[in-house]
Amino acid sequence: MLSKLFNLVLLPTLLLLTVGTVAAVEPLTDPTAAEQLKQLNDQTIIATRVLLDSEWDQFKHGANEATWSLATLWGWRVSESQDWGVRLKLPLMYDQRDNGIGGLGDLEVGTGTAFRLNNTWRTAGGLELHVDTASDPTLGDRVWRLKSAWGVAHDVTDWLTLNFNVDYSHSIAEEHKVAPQHYLELSLPAIFILPYDWSINGKYEAKVDFENGGHWTHIVNVGVAKRLSNLPLVLSATLEKSLDGGPKKFQANFTIVYFFERYHVPK
Image (tube, rainbow, N blue to C red; front, side):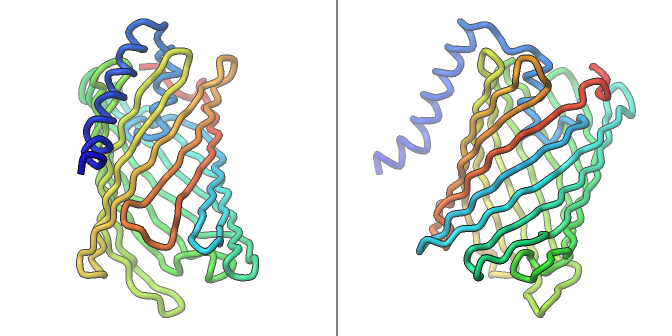
């Protein structure tokens, strides 16, 4: 009981106090770099960028799966308080569990808009279509799925941003006789901006599967990121773990993000 209390309450509190102390005595990160670091986990900030993500899933009994994704987001300034964006994600996958099958995964395309409510509050919403484009059925979800998303973010201080996101997904077509998908995802990311263009983040996620009797699953992940000083390039690494057991032991991601600063109008 004491161990769980420490992990859930005391450890985050100590981390928050430590980060606050460091941020108070060290030079602050440049505002542009800080905004780019936030965008890794804050969907209320829209700016043109391209990213390459490498994901490693380690399953129990030694099996693993690797995914390399190329994604891009085009952003436009609509008004002084609103941005609009279009997102495209193309994954390449390798699944060791099924005799080393590799190929194209499921394409994702989406669009959304974000509003700056004031200097510290933002909100955003959008729609995303998950397309069954996998070159092999084992490399995709075998469904066409529509996701509606909404999120809100608050800059508590210059170095701490808190988010709350709601994603509602349901399949609109199923292939290869797979079961329909219908679920709700809630997430609570926290982003800590550190001196010298570094950041750390933590996120709690909960998923309600309506096709499985309203079953809840819980996931936590932590990450660290660095924005290069001479390029608008951010490198990040994250580690994700389910709190409910399941077939996956953990998930690790390494992401490279390049921001097209000249296409992003300053605030």
